[in-house]
Image (cartoon, rainbow, N blue to C red; front, side):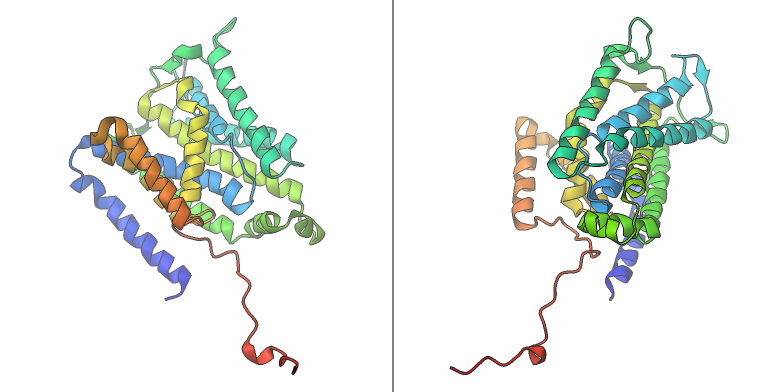
Length: 330
């Protein structure tokens, strides 16, 4: 079966399993874990656009996650006296988070590799410090106490209150972001991102506007984080700066790398493993993170390209034996 056909069948099978998963979950706690998997898979797909498609190493992705969460809290809580409907607040958050992606991405356009990683890491830390300290003289973020009392999502006049309801909401968003990512990968801008990832100078020589293409990657990746941030804020009904530490950026990046950079199903698989495995080993108490870390190390040693590889990169094929010149006689 062709690789594309195999992935479609696999996606359909996983979608079917995801639909019935809450029905066979042992308890509501595990439904909550599955909802968190969908949430983080959406975030990882957003980072995959920046890292996997465009080849831009972003270590500050948690900044967009935090911006999205706090923007939703501003629009749907008593903090500023706004209580916008969920279906109105989320699009506003997505647009504003995408704009923040452009603003943060613009100063980094000339940077690549380690330098880009360091600068984006700095943006993530600056965002965290702002979330902690913007509570005086005007209380904007609530400081270390965060913002509480955020409105739950209400769809068709029905407010969500159970993990199962949130799970299906997050699953629907994940399906849409998967579809959008697949369409983007095979679109004109998707091919431009892949050209930039392989060789930016060659891409520029081919007439690709690399500045616009990279800004689009930052904006679209940030918009996915805006969706995830809105969902987290509405689900927890509170947001705190500690939700958006640097370790969250590393966690989301690990999902992309573990699953296979650029591979959509691989990214979802990576998110599934990184969210669920610590819960599986919870009975080991103090040693669960150690066991989980050792498993990741073994996997990266024996499968450094990730669980699923992205077939957009073609490996060099050896020349046919018939085309080789005969060896000179001695």
